[in-house]
Length: 243
Image (cartoon, rainbow, N blue to C red; front, top):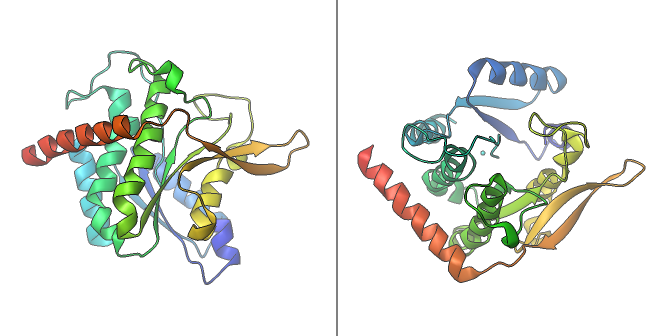
């Protein structure tokens, strides 16, 4: 996105790095601004496993200064201090809280885009809450249902997947740069060129050319997805009353 912004001055992009570790965030910002000196890169510290931390992060963004980031794979049974499953809090609910807290702010932009990073292996056939893959399935369901709710406010939600990409979780596959291509596509293409009912995936041809693919979300059920969002809203309301 910064490379795209540097080549298109009329399309100025501000990147907000929402990170848990301030030191690593500072290093990342330094590397980005070194490569793109005119770039706008901000840092906010947030622990997605702590709903109070998410509330504080959103408050800071609203008052001072939006893509989501880092996934976590945890052992089965780990709980946050809020009593939530750690993987669920970090990879689903923390992001959902951030979206809802920043909804009014995003609606003012006229073309806000929420990008959820899912997985190419997400499937309705393996819907088990004890499995990380199930978390990706939740992301797919949330994305499509959010669109129904938010489109009237000119907020658009998309789900993408990076293919099979080299990260700290899975190594020795395609590069992170190529894996992020689907995010780049849904962040920069004109909104009328995108289909919000599809998942956009990053792909690489055998000789190294990167491209994106589009697929329908497997076995989407609107009734189940709406029930899921209602559960998340009730959970958010409980935390809002406590804060």
